[in-house]
Length: 160
Image (cartoon, rainbow, N blue to C red; front, side):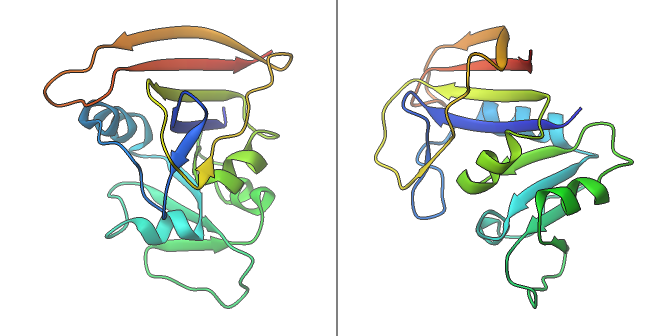
């Protein structure tokens, strides 16, 4: 089960200047719960946006740069190579950014999307989820509150 995990605004906004444009503590907790113990597949910019590698996860970093090396990362040069490295993992996660999500849509069986209810000024977008290929099977709405500036909905999509 190859799973894309993302948070995106109403118009598929992901982030700006290699960072998120919202802070949703419950979404961070959900991301940690779902991805801990798994391989996480990301682009170089996403990996470099972390202060340090995330604990208890194997970081597979896709880059076009053949000489790129970073401590805490397994460097690969394609989605196929990343998935080959993760073949023993029953559920590797594709965690971004925008280009990697677009590549990953061709390989994924499941999307765990947090739809953030707002519109944002960004420079990176999540790809459109083609309704002919994907079915929304679960939604869980969360109101905005003192810790969450925006309401959001957890969505689970399964490839048809």
